[in-house]
Image: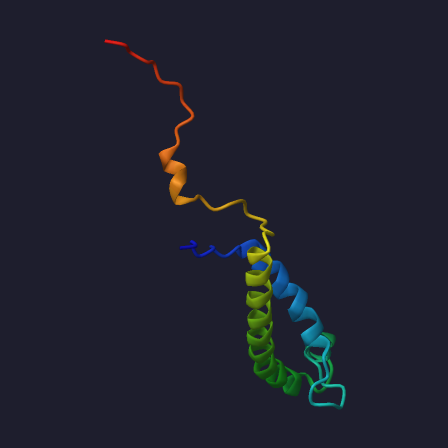
Length: 107
C-alpha cells in the first residue's frame, strides 16, 4: 500500500500567490470593479473609498478561497509528480537503516 504524500507548504504558498494576483485583477462582475481597483481607491484617498472598503471586504475572502482551492490542487499534482521545495518526507523504512559502523564480534 502506498503511503500518502505529505503536503509541501512552501509550494502551496507559491501557488496561492500565483493564483491570487490574477484573480484579484479579474473583472468578474463587470464595470471595472476588481479587488486591486478597490485597494487603489482605498489608499489613493478617492471619494468612494468607503464603498471600496466594503467591496474589498466581501471580495477578498471569496477570491482567497478560490485561490486556495486552485493552489491546493496544483500543489497536490506537483507533489504527486515529484516536485517538492521543502525536501523529502521521511519514509517509515528510514529508521530501519543505520549508517553507523558497528563492530563485529566473533565470540
